[in-house]
Image (cartoon, rainbow, N blue to C red; front, side, top):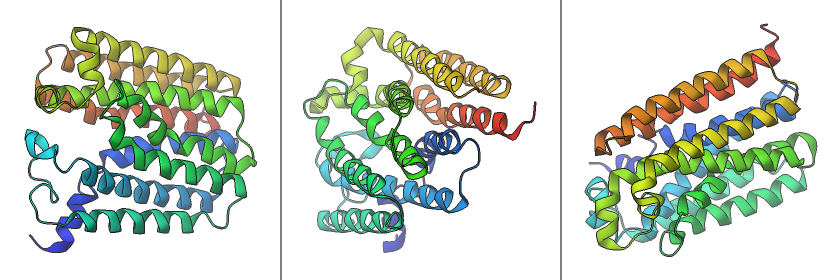
Length: 285
């Protein structure tokens, strides 16, 4: 395997699901903040920034977990774990991608820059939360949803209360889908001592996932209502709810492959919510 392909694997560019899970809430926030008319330059900045920061996060995550990943079936062949890349290479890649991402927002206002620094610190510290925090997926939700307050800051120069509420909804969504992800590795994680929500929730894991989906959807509905979103938005949330019910059918047996399939399918749940927001502003109804 040539070096370029190793870097692609390190940054998970060959697995775009993580990018999409970050992107849908960020785009939704841009549409809400701009009343459905986001500046194309902001769209480009936030889309590319999402790709770069997710890739940087993957690199630093693999650096932090390189010793643990050897003992997990799903991660045993990652570039750092297999010794195909040196640990320092992951750090350099993560730092370079973060710097490029920061350069993208230099034309934006001071508040957006300040929030971006907080986002980098959260993303860099997330891997270490798995050492002691019982539900690190909640912290992941902050990292994956920080594009929401940044989008409002970039458009409006301030972050309204509804943006933070929307971030809360994103945290709950992240707990749901990343618990499904953690259910895949639960046996391995128990052996090596990593903390995950799948372990913390125990036999109530499926119930916890569904409660997080339901609460996240309810909070998102409230936020959308505050912005005057109705028909298409409700249709999007209904479709997202159907996705969540489908995920229940996948995870209730706690089988590895079906839990992983549920995690991956969250792309469509996030896309449904964003489509509802965007179509509502299009005046299609």
